[in-house]
Length: 272
Image (cartoon, rainbow, N blue to C red; front, side, top):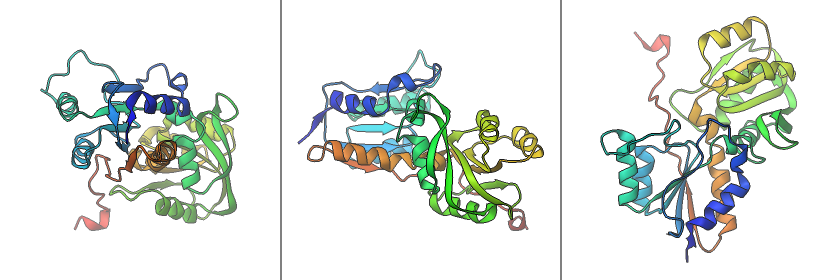
């Protein structure tokens, strides 16, 4: 049993409407024929060589990723650079590539909701709403207040393991309850998290100066995860939707390969 690629795309675009994507974003089908027969799908965060290797080894005909391959577009796909090589490998192995990026971030049940659920939030709503259930980021409550230190440990235990771990900024003994989250890079939502009354804001890729200047003015405290770890909770969710939608036609695998660029965090005391 199999299903045509266009049917899978139709479902994914219903769940993650393209119109929710930011204007600068590139979402949708990157390689593949719409009438291709698909019986095995690999879902991952990044369209990189290790994910392509996994798809080829599994015999998957479709990779669904969160991140686009060419975010800023290209005029060339020659196999003279890593992305060109990837395009050729996918085509040569009959593998389609589809992505849902900022549309999956904002969608109801998408990346932001998956991250909020993973770290234990309830009563969530969009941090920057487009509608009642869609928009950038999420803000919600913990079932009961806890210290920042304990909550950071909870976050670390519930996000997928990766070498870089997480960073925490703030008073570790302070009580926290209202939490804002955003998968991926989150500098641009610092002010929104403060305006909405968050005690803690979780995101990735926080830069030194924005984080430092923000904390000088007080809460929300900051938890900085890696980009991959903050967005990976969406992978099993998307996989489950595909399995349930095509139960007898598709085998769906959630990739657990860590595609963060970092391979180790060396603490100060380890340097001697």
